[in-house]
Image 1 (tube, one colour):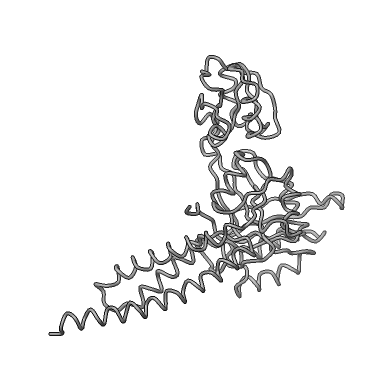
Image 2 (image 1 turned 180 degrees about the vertical axis):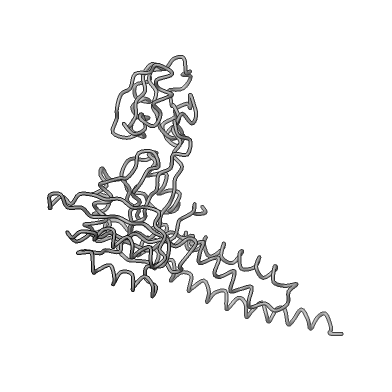
Length: 366
């Protein structure tokens, strides 16, 4: 039997080697963080972490040690995320709206450590990334209740940025009043037109007067400034905390599954890989002015196994009665089948633009 002192000496030698490898790994992690900073990508990449864990399981032959090594890898990646987050604190994220608005909430969920920079329009937020003022932009592309965000779709068609991730934010509208206000005090509600529309049943039931405002967060600020118990805002709980308001009634949405999808736009195409599960792509195209061209384009996508989850059309401003089409589908558009698909689509499309290949994003850890 080996002497305990000798065993401990070998452990120390092993720890020394692991320390050197740890330093090397963290240097590489820093390079990954810098790439994400330049390209406006979030720290947490669940698909990549799943791959690391899967590969790790193959390295350990002793079945008793596999679960321990898996825990070791999870801990290592958690440390790596914290280190990357510290590096990414200088990232600037553009969004449209004000602090407390749902766009700001989405940007905080995806980039908790980054500086969030507000702009007064989708176009200005988008252009801030194009001209280098910000590293990326978080903009809404679709709401489950109100439908498409047409201005952002148009920016995708005409702009130079790529979608590198999609984030689904559950939209919960609360009724916010000044401190001490009760539901019986409220006579008037103030909010964005969409928010008022999404809470129409509650508003009608209570017989409240509606006043439209530019966005939900500013509506909350207005209520705070008025200091009137009879006026309330339809906004987020985040806005209540931000402006010191009370939540008079929670979750007043007509549709409790109301969700807005936000896209992360950056100057570089990240090109997520994989043909199933959590990998998607966005594609814009114009069909030729020939009978059956649109049906042909969609048929080609289906024939190559790309399952569409979104299809919508938008008029082209410069051409009367001409439209472009937006498709979001599952799969790897940059893989061999994807390349063949795009090449074949050229037979019935005048313009094809891949806007991005990406994964669904999750909340980032603080």
